Length: 253
Ligand code: DBV
Image 1 (cartoon, rainbow, N blue to C red):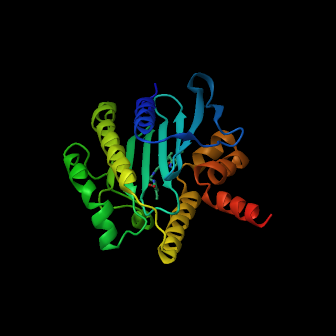
Image 2 (image 1 turned 60 degrees about the horizontal axis):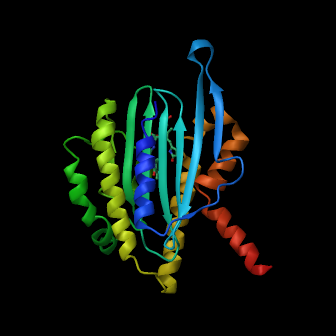
């Protein structure tokens, strides 16, 4: 029962077709992790696997895939551009819990309130967003503090049926990823020092928020323990600060 495996497979196929894709290192011990959860006949294996790539314009393309039976499936898929591009993040959080599905899909902006940025990276996505509204309506309740990190084309929906995920959400995921890769094709490196500083600040703001507020932290801690979880979050899922620190060390030695 792996609802999101076709999402991951199709994303990798598309990335391979469209980008000069290279592997991205996954720290040892984090490629795959499993635990037995629950008791007696409710016992389930919960398997978390990681996949990661990079390309000339994209610093890290990574997926965390949690498979824990019918009522626990997650695909968290994020693309972090290199710091010399003004590209948004591609953010997908596809979550299945006992209560139903929770779907978040967006080109997460570096500069949410800048009209020029919106014209460049949100307006082209709005027709795609609107084409899914009928089948994937707004999912309601949403943490207010997360709002600055999402665009007006944020697809946030809570379908009840697996079938909706397999059809409409699957199509939306592919459309958003295609549209993202079109932005990547056209992106030109930024060289202006002020713009570079703004991008770095925006990337760090996003990254720190996500690492600090990771909604999966509680779940991972329960399954795999606190030490593994914190290392997974800071050393792989949201690793920019680590990588910057390592690069800084290298340059002085
Ligand atoms: N979310 C992650 C990672 C996950 C993950 C790395 C690998 O960022 C899974 C796993 N998301 C995950 C799980 C839940 C959510 C929920 C397991 C359910 C948590 C629970 O109910 O116990 C978008 N994901 C959510 C929620 C949102 C998002 C808004 C609901 C949280 C809530 O209601 O409090 N994506 C998520 C988010 C940002 C984003 C908050 C912020 C920038 O990009």
